[in-house]
Length: 487
Image (cartoon, rainbow, N blue to C red; front, side, top):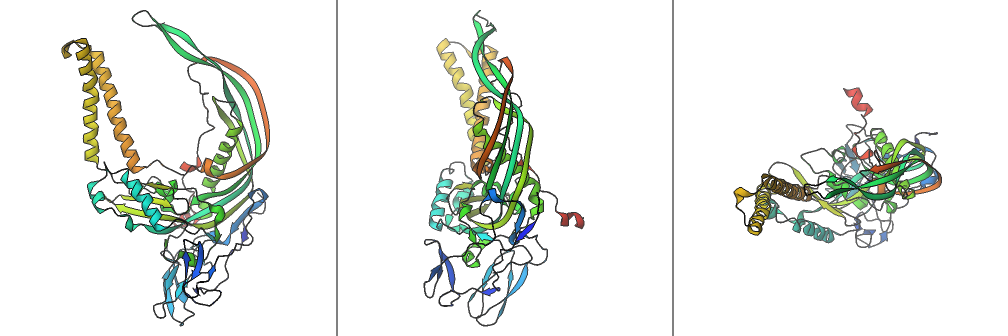
C-alpha cells in the first residue's frame, strides 16, 4: 500500500474537566438510554455527539493506510492524570485505566476526559447502550434458568442478575479496500450410485454408496470492500486459552451495529464502567490481515455453489489497497461470578442487540453420576430386551453383542457428559467474523476448466477442500516492539 500511516486527527479539541450543557451550561449531563441522547439533568435539553470528521465512511474508497489519532500507541506509566474543575477550580486525580470520568468532591460537578491523551485510553467513537438494564437482566435470568439442573449449587444460591454491570469494552475497527485472487481445484458430484463390495455372513450382497466427482481448475479474482472488522483490543479478552476466565464469551455476543458509532463523548460513560485498550495496532496487524483474507475467502463461496464437493485453494492472495484503523467503545451488560476454583465465569449481553452468551459453573459430581447412570441404563436395557425376546440367559449371549452394547453405551454417556459440559461452559463459542462482517464484492473474474473425473470415491467431499477454513481467529498476537526492547 502507498501512503502508509496517514494520521486522521479525531481529537475533540476540548479541554479536560467539566462537560457542560450547550444550552444552560450545567455540568450534570448524562446519557438517557430510552431516548438514546445526552440529557441535561438541569434544563432537560437533549443533544447528540457529533460525527468524526476525516474518517472515510466508504471502505471501497480507501487508499493507503490510515490511522485515527484514537489508535495511537499505548504509552506506559501515564494512566494517572489530573482534571481541573472549571466549576470551583479544584483538581481531581483520575486513573484512566479504571475510569474516564469522576465527580468533583467539592462542587459535585462531573469531570471527564475529553481530548485524546498519550496513553491511548480515549477512543475515536462510542456506541451508546440501547438495551436497558432490566432487559439485560431478563436475558441473563433466562440464560441461567435453562442451565439450572447441573449448575453448581453454591452458584444457584448466590446468583442474582441485580449484579449486572454496564461496561464499555475497547475495540479496534478496521475498514479495508482489497483485491483478492484465489486459484485451486473445485469438485462437483457428477453422480452417486451403489456398488457391491462383498457379502455378509448370510450370503447377502453388501453395498456401498460411491461418488463420481468432476474436478475443475478454478480461479476467482475480485474486489472486496470490508466494513468494520471488529477486533477486541484487550489482551485479556484476546487470550482464548485462559483457563481462569471464560473470555471467549465476550467475543461471542458480536457483531455490534458499529455503523451507528458516534464521536466519543465522555458523558456517554456516566453510570457505566469501561476498560482501557492495551493492544497496539502493530501487534494486531498480522492477525487482522489474515482475518481480512478469511472474510474474502468466505465471501466468494456464494459464487462457488456449483462445487458441492468443496474447493481446495492452492493459491490465496489478498492485496490491500487501502486500510483504515479506528477505535471505539462498544457496550456490554456483564454478569460475572468466580467459583470455588477461582475460575471467573461471565454471562454477557450485547448492549445493542441483546445477544446473550455465558459460562455457568457446573456441578461435576452430579453430571458424572448422571452420566454413569445413563451408561448403565443404555448398556443393560438392550441386553435385557434381547434376553426377553430371545428367551436367552446372559451366559448364552454372544460376546460380540455385549461388546457392541458396551461401545454404544460409552458413546451415549460420554456424548451426554461433554455436550452438557459444553453447554454450561461454552468454551468454543466465538464471533464468526468471516461471515458476520459486512462486505461488498464486485468485479468478479472467473475461470473454470474441467481437469479430470474421479470415479468411485468413498466420500462426496473433495480431498483437501479448504474454502471454509478460518485462520485469523487462532493466530497469536504479533510481538510488541516495546516488549522486545524490554527483554
